[in-house]
Image (cartoon, rainbow, N blue to C red; front, side):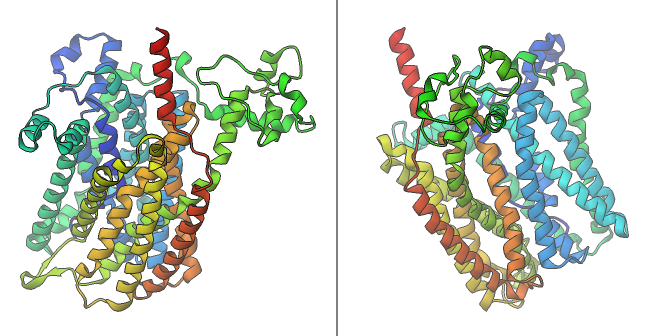
Length: 574
């Protein structure tokens, strides 16, 4: 196959991040030349947030990189389980590495500086893949694998910086006139519910149209190219240079960025991460482990004037030792990591309270990883020709169908289910989303097991349509549920880590799926996938049961409601 791409949640995540920005018009080159360094740094952020071109570039790069499950099996002759394991390890490490990227942005890099760094990872990774693809022998495997992992790291780092830029521009720019929304109001009516949804999510719909338009175009071009150019010198030449275009594109970013290096690093006073406080709480509690904890020591607990102070709770009293004052010089104790504030201790307790819920989030990562690996291999094993035309239809057609199902499920939830959650019930919206997603995941695995058992190489690949529709519906609502949970339940100083922690949990779930694969049998063949899918069905149902138990007993908070109350208090005081 000459062309190939994979549809992932990252495209929709980039789209959702872009919605928060106001999408200002591009700034003319003459204006950039006349600006001061500080103005230039701000305008570079505006330029970098012109997301339509970024989305198209990302789709193009992912288009080729996503075929590596088939590449490992067909070209490098890896077993199906080994090929899937490599992809899952790559996705898992990349998701977890997102936390490292977020920390780097907290302690040193600006958003634009992180784009510079991630572009370097992307460029080197794509370069190694390009060179390795045209190399023979053992070196080929090493180069391709290294390049693939570097691209994954660059992808997640780029997402973190893009999210931050979106939030910055959302605060700085006013909403501008949008002819697209005006047209929707004229067609649907200005006061209808649908038109109001369009208005509140205007950039979502614009960028979604761009995303799907690009993917449909790419699929159409790839289908025609496969039909017309297959087994020709042009096809062979294209296979040799196909990675050069995105490599050059991403390589231009760090090269051009050298002219604007002053905007790469944060001012010293803006550096710092709340995760440092969590580590300090554990260190201080361990250093003071011999101090007895009792209710009489509450008067000795240390606190400072913080923006969002938390009340002291009686649970996990071992951590309270980190806030006990031992001397008359608390500032010196803090420098030695022997003293923390009550708020820092309570934030650490909050994270520990979330652990049981987080463990249930692994199910989504497992099922998602199967859709990105074995579903593709299963389709590659079946007949993909289209009727009497004898055209080899790319498997990405099913992935596009999955994408459409994902968007449809999101729309269904917004239009139908979200209206049922009013008042205090709104804080249960995210847990409900994830619960629905787990139900869909269980059904998806059940349907996949039935299809894998009864359908083989002689059957059309379109038998996989039901499982791809369910897979897309699950993806459309489950990730939003996880990210919404983190957004609402994380301490307010850590709310910006909601998407980072979501990626980390999904990545951990992808790596856990490797254990399930080898538990089923290390020699798992594509014609025996039904056994693995049945195991995944059982695991998903068990996790759904555990999630129901944990979620109904979890003490929920609502950060958005707390912020709104604070704003009301400030306005009343003013």
